[in-house]
Length: 490
Ligand SMILES: Cc1cc2nc3c(=O)[nH]c(=O)nc-3n(C[C@H](O)[C@H](O)[C@H](O)COP(=O)(O)OP(=O)(O)OC[C@H]3O[C@@H](n4cnc5c(N)ncnc54)[C@H](O)[C@@H]3O)c2cc1C
Image (cartoon, rainbow, N blue to C red; front, top):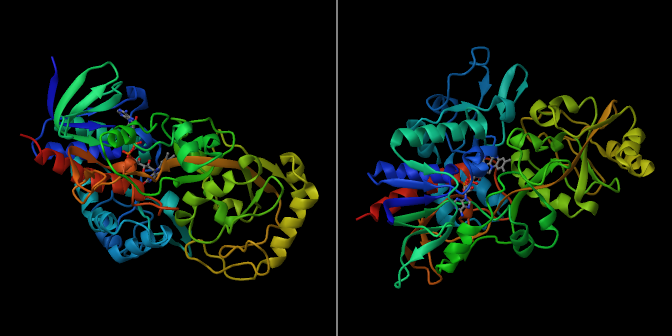
């Protein structure tokens, strides 16, 4: 017997749970089909830090959203408002002006209310002191437009989503890879096909099955030569079928198909994500040190901007280097600024020496070259007042590439190096949707019955990405997709 549902959601990450909840709130009966087994629940969303970028009115506004502040910190927090205009300006700047204006307006304009909505479903939020604030002059100063995270990070988020789905009466089915869309002769979508040949009928189908980052063939094909060699930071299950089945049904490809989010990642990490360490294999402290390639040469401006605005594009720069590796270097002055979760917990690849030459030797690098790079860097540092919470203008002069902020000489042993490679997070290219999250065809008309949200939507992110926007985008557009799909039910 063929099963019949009001709405079927394909993919159980944050976007999928958001879409399912939204459809359910409209009264629809919702089935969420997840390819992975239960022990791999949550897709990439599980691997996240749970950081969610939202516009907000400052500390007073966020107090109503987050858990009570720790008693020893209340009254010592500096957290300026982050307005819609700020969020939009950051998104526009890092995407080099290419972000889809309508999707961007929706993401930004609905970010804050969507956080309140998620909270009403049972998600719990906190201020991310551990990632997004430094203590300066006795005050906790938040920086980089990002302040709120889910309690428990990505792991907590998926636990909370699963519990909320259960409360709402959403059926979640694991081990259920969707292999195709059931389309009628008029092109409308009326359900999905499963790997075992079963057909499930639905009035509305919402695709939230992620990008193609875990598919080496598609990576090499769309991102370019060498991308098949990148390590995958998250789930091995995001292999692009959702995108492909939609394209086969006539959907329009959209966005930056040769672009992706990729970061500095522990060079010894496994080929796809580690459920225990999740995002701890990221190495995001480079603004406080220098980064060299295997030849001992610097190749990026480590302090071009706050980490939140450079980390997602620097993975690609590492992949371009000889052997696709690089080394982040710090000394005893800068190392204390590194987050212990990323730089001092088990499973982290690290080399230490009392001299720069010794470090080079340990790394199998030309000792003279690395020493020369560090000496030239140190000599180029212009004295200034170091402050990790602002773009402090502590910079270099006369070297290429420059370091534009947070430049301090590396002179205090011990020196430490962290070998990194390119870890891909998610792909930017995907499907074109309209403001109601309806998937559009090649003529720009909605494919009846088909909706999409999350990573597999194209058009929002190009070249780069403002940290914490992926989860918010998944929830904002997932909420719209679920609402639209439910409106289709008859
Ligand atoms: C290590 C790491 C850290 C990150 N940190 C952050 C952060 O702190 N903040 C932030 O905003 N973003 C972060 N991101 C990015 C973030 O993960 C994504 O933007 C977001 O999770 C995408 O959500 P999604 O629901 O679209 O996809 P996912 O969460 O990946 O869910 C897609 C689901 O679809 C399933 N699926 C795939 N194919 C099929 C199929 N054929 N049939 C059925 N199901 C299928 C997959 O198994 C998966 O469960 C991070 C990513 C990684 C990897």
